[in-house]
Length: 100
Image 1: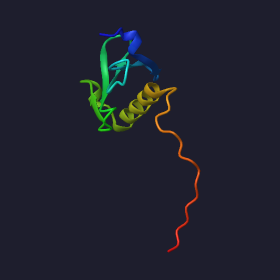
Image 2: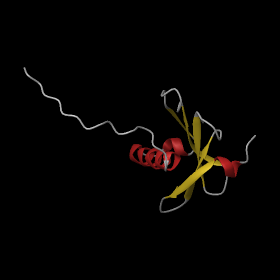
Image 3: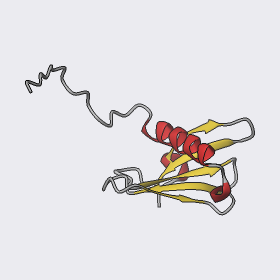
Image 4: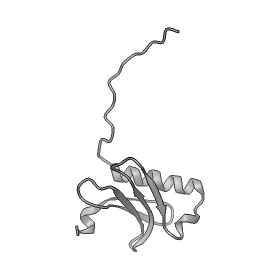
């Protein structure tokens, strides 16, 4: 098993705590975890990264969060996970016309 520091992609914080984002593997991870603070308190696990069939599984306490708080956590986690990586290359600029 890989060293967890090697798998850690980064962190983000809210007003109360710091969250770490950890990939499932060093090469082509299919999931990542969001961990609260320095403890092993799993906040969120996102699976299906390679297949595109994404699924969020929330930790016991964290499942009770308000929907807007869950959305914020997911967005921050994805930003940290993909930081510095180009997920989708920009499409070339083109113009389309519709006649009808």
